[in-house]
Amino acid sequence: MKEKTRKQKDFFRPLAFILNPLSLLLLLFFLHGAAADSGDGNGAVIRVAIARNTPRFTLKTSSRVYAIEVRTGQKYMLLERSSYEIKYISPSRLALAGATLESPVKLMPPDGGGKVNLNGRFYKGELFIKTAADEKLEVIEQLSVEDYLYGVLGVEMSPDWPLEALKAQAIASRTYALKNINPKKDYDLTDGAEMQVYNGASLVNSKIIKAVNSTRGSVLAYKGKLITAFFHACCGGHTASAGAAWSGDSIKPLAGIRDPFCSNSPHYRWNFYVAAGDLLAFIQKNGSTALKIKGARIHKKDRSGRTRAFRFATDAGSVTVAASALRRHFGASDIRSTFITRVARLRGGYEFKGKGWGHGVGMCQDGARQMALNGKNYKRILKHYYPGVTIDDVK
Image 1 (cartoon, rainbow, N blue to C red):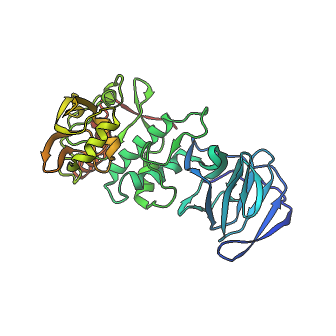
Image 2: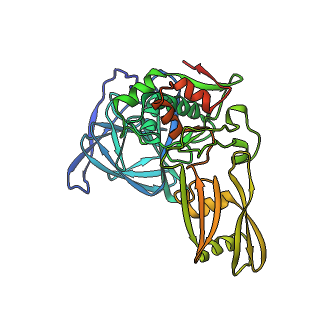
Image 3: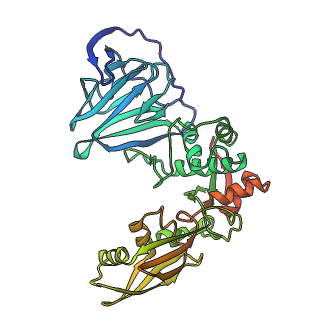
């Protein structure tokens, strides 16, 4: 992210000589001066939590980096091509290369360029390091939404997917990011699948840059308001209603549609075997006193065909359990969706058969890829998966 620069005379004086874990002799300088302005003035800024609940981490620099105490404005210089350990000291203090700094601390290259390697990932935005609860640290990257999208597309879709699918993803992800901006919170988004996956500046190619730049500022709206543009890997033939997935009402763009485009996806069908003892432990965890399972069946489905609940016959009577609870317990990599079509008793356990991967709401990424391969442009893709939306410009 390019940053506004200010002309100023910096006066350097050595603060400490530090021997890092790589046995390199590093020089840490103290600089007088106020912190530089944040943001590049070219659009909305997003704050992404890229590290949480960690007592320490390793920072590597490719160029010089300022470490700035946010409250005092005091600056420290980290040398290029160097490695630093940052760790929690107290609720208001953290250690950086042997020096004690007041939390929070902002990291930024002097010229707004360069990258910082944090735990093996590269980041270009301003990094804010702060102490958190339970003697842990939290790292938040602040950067423009457009720069943020470069780090989303390569992990939410393959960088080699068709350009029109990547454009559709760029607009959906931009809309989702802007919808989640909340100044009242410490950060707007996390970098994991619970929101949308973000990998910093590590997986960016020319196609991703083109997909983001060619749709710059474009968002999805319904009746004049941004939608929460959910998306998922594979819908299994019918997208889910947001209301059914998370309870509540669904607007038209998130009400669910039939979708024939992901039928050739490797994620379209799946099966998972659960040993009877493991399934019994799950039922007991949900309040049952059962000691034996006698049978299992799908009890309730929603309009899209997804299972809402299972009913288990046990020696203690019938037990009804939500499909979402089953998925959380066994994991989304095994129970890939709640679009479960059959439960069969096998020797020693039960087999669950299902379709799709993910919550199923909004755009089906595998379907978007196939639509692009079929010659559909990003507008057709988005209006298929989010019926009733307009594609607006927020520039």
